[in-house]
Length: 230
Image 1: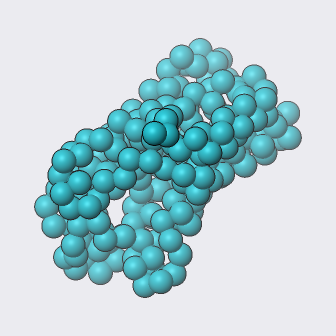
Image 2 (image 1 turned 60 degrees about the vertical axis):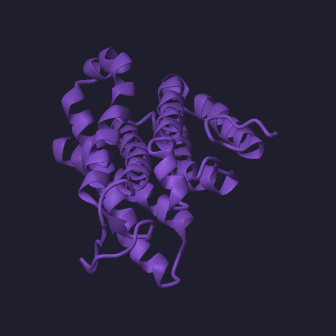
Image 3 (image 1 turned 120 degrees about the vertical axis):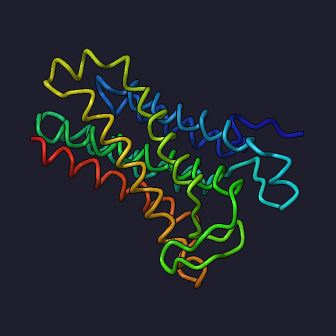
């Protein structure tokens, strides 16, 4: 029997570990902050995957392992943001812009995970773009429970920032706005993933491309908040 780490397959775990170590190095003084945000995403994702397991198994919606494609789809954009941080953080404006973008991207993938895993436990979902009722598990479908779970996930993800409250405070950045960036970035990311899911159902893209662009969109929303503030 293969042993999985937080639902990741052995190969996916190796890829994730390599990315994690690189993030610690590339993140300079905030390497551990970036790393723990990604690790917390994995922990939350593993927990939420097993919520309603019997219900999901009965309807063939349960997925207990994630492979390399999942790691790349969810981790590539946050990793690229940290890579940009490594080269651009000497500029204070770009430094904090990239921090906001990173927070939004990770909040987005966390919110999307909660939305999909908990959303299927709700009643009949609707397709976000058409507002038509569809069967459970349809890409692009949403429920109020799923959307609410996504907001909760973004909030839980943002709790990782608390140990660094002194660091951000010394830079003149209110934790309130970091929480707002995380929650709005998370909500926007999961809703954008649902929009892309509509196109998945029509043969354009797949869940991996949707996850990737959802993380990008979450970072754009968080970055927009940063630009409005500074």
